[in-house]
Length: 225
Ligand SMILES: *Cc1c(COP(=O)(O)O)cnc(C)c1O
Image (tube, rainbow, N blue to C red; front, side, top):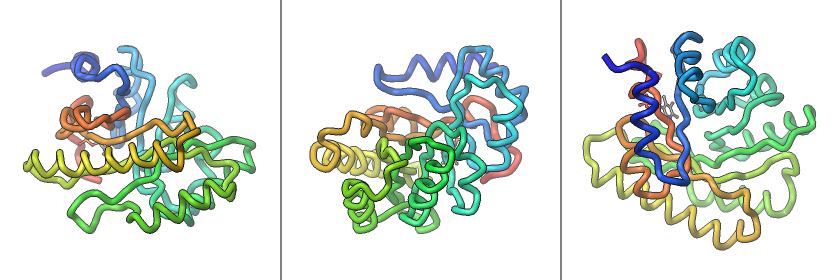
């Protein structure tokens, strides 16, 4: 058995100069987060609001908490005061609510726009049309309490490495295009959140700046989410 600290070290050694590890601690106890924290990890990801809030309250305050999963609009208010980055913005309705709640707590909330890149229909994410509408409205100044920091995507759950690589490559191309056009003068648009335990090495080849790794660090989860 390798320890949490050893796994974090091993994955950190794989990172490119521009990539950061988001340790996905969902379903794992506070003790496991603390073990990672003691190994120097400060960035953690959760996908359930209730669990994210409970961990934020119980654990050291210099942890950067990332909301990585599908976020319901009615729950945004619980995390708006502290969440570092919301990865999964998959509708304009959600963006609008985040803007509203961020304004209430006087914050500019960094978010990533989640694109649908997988073959599975079950996965969340925007299509190109929805993305274009959001980008246009952001640039018109409709969401003053939002900072669009980049894109997020989840590849198809498959053994086919070529397919995963194609999906990441397409998202990287879109990211680069946006960076050179709509976000040309915006240094904050810099994050590409791709890659999980099974595919983070491929993601790093396609420009990942954030990889979201859970089971490789903390072990398999008792139930899948
Ligand atoms: C659970 C989860 C991860 C981490 O998955 P692992 O396969 O355990 O590394 C990454 N991203 C999202 C959105 C998740 O929900």
